[in-house]
Image 1: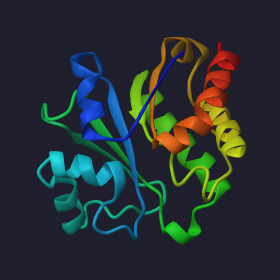
Image 2: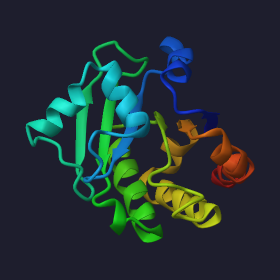
Image 3: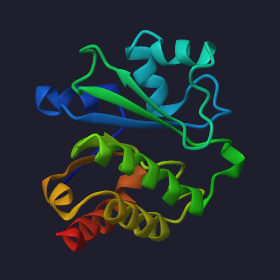
Length: 178
């Protein structure tokens, strides 16, 4: 498994260039309107495509809602997977692992082994870093076959503050996964 760390900005995503491909996995809370963070930035880049899905009640961000959307060449990924996290006030450590499991199971079932993602929720604030990374590793192991994990290329998109905290533990997780 290859790991790459980057900040959650459109400029950083653009720097990946045509080699990025794969899937961009984003999350949204059901009570975050307008869409926030990287999801909101990507929505802006997609000319409000995600917001239109929300307005039409096609997407509402309910717990573990999975939506696959085209990106139409506006980002260097083949597709976008949007995962609902439910209400922000209900999100805690157990839900972090369940959200990772749902997202990874969806990616694995589609045969996707190359993706970029922010960690679900607010790691370091609502969820402890150690617990989050243990859950992330367990969800990867339960969702992907050893062959898929060996071929996986994952880009974690987090703020510089969170990246400083998770960089070495994430690398350790990747080494443990082989």
